[in-house]
Length: 398
Ligand SMILES: *[C@@H]1O[C@H](CO)[C@@H](O)[C@H](O)[C@H]1NC(C)=O
Ligand SMILES: *[C@@H]1O[C@H](CO)[C@@H](O)[C@H](O)[C@H]1NC(C)=O
Ligand SMILES: *[C@@H]1O[C@H](CO)[C@@H](O)[C@H](O)[C@H]1NC(C)=O
Ligand SMILES: CC(=O)N[C@H]1CO[C@H](CO)[C@@H](O)[C@@H]1O
Image: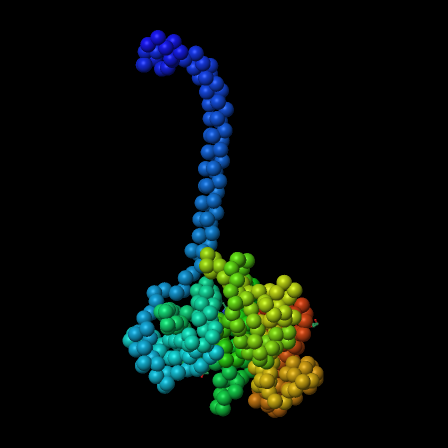
């Protein structure tokens, strides 16, 4: 009472405040400006959110479209039973990171069980790499993963069983023989698989360890590329990890022929892709330090030479100034009968010179594949195309 200055809302029974009408008009102006701004900001935000969700869904859809070929995991006890407690009689072979056992499940399915010896340096990484690679790849000429078993101290992959063993066995063991068409078929299977790794799948995969013991043969003698323990997948991701990779001497491109190749791996948990950057400068790994598919092409060339000459690149007949490659390069085309596996050709054969011509073309391509400079090597698409042409010729003369 008697405070004339007091003012306020009508419900308090006081005079209205003098500035309020002015303020409400100010508010109106403010609202007139704010509403459109807020509205457009909100709309923009909604549009951005929708776009982000759409993109995320697209990425997810891409990820979902990759076949996940690792179904349920299998337990240690199932594997123990399948291999008769990992008995020596079921041991198929031993690799750089562990052992491979033959296993049979109660339903009669035969499998190969690759057990990673985790106390060996690199074995854990190798298991992770092989899982990451094989999870997403599908090709008839690659070995399939059926399941996996991963505990803290035990890691194993359950793979398709290959009843006919490895190309290594067929090339270098007594009592085993492959004819010229079988050899070309197997090498075409391998070329198809590597072509898929390099060109049929994004991001490209580099196997890094192509050699006869990694080529496995199924019941129909179809070749399957196996052992992705040191394979490389390409992506562009953030975190950097280190690993040590032991590739196989004789099959490694010249720039890398040191005993150890030290690489840093970039791994993205989100996309599950690994990227390799090289720590040590090897010619093969290029100026940006990126492993290239051309080192597989090199190894493939050496593999072709070995398959048709039955000489290992590490054979003692080769020395500092002569190699499997130079020996063959100096023999084509006219002295090809001097280098080719003698079991493949018999002097009384009718179409001998034609067959030798085919082998000569194969060897020329092998020499091209293992060119010193990565830039001069063909890519696997060209290799597959040439092999198929040669195969047509060869079949006509057989
Ligand atoms: C490959 O293995 C299958 C199944 O064990 C066998 O039937 C076939 O004869 C083998 N092939 C050769 C060429 O030995
Ligand atoms: C090998 O390379 C040479 C030179 O680039 C080329 O002329 C030849 O056709 C290639 N041979 C094969 C079988 O690819
Ligand atoms: C030799 O090649 C010809 C095709 O040029 C073919 O008709 C013939 O059957 C081949 N001979 C043998 C013994 O394979
Ligand atoms: C997908 C693919 O190219 N698979 C090949 C695997 O090997 C067999 C046997 O040679 C070929 O017939 C397939 O084309």
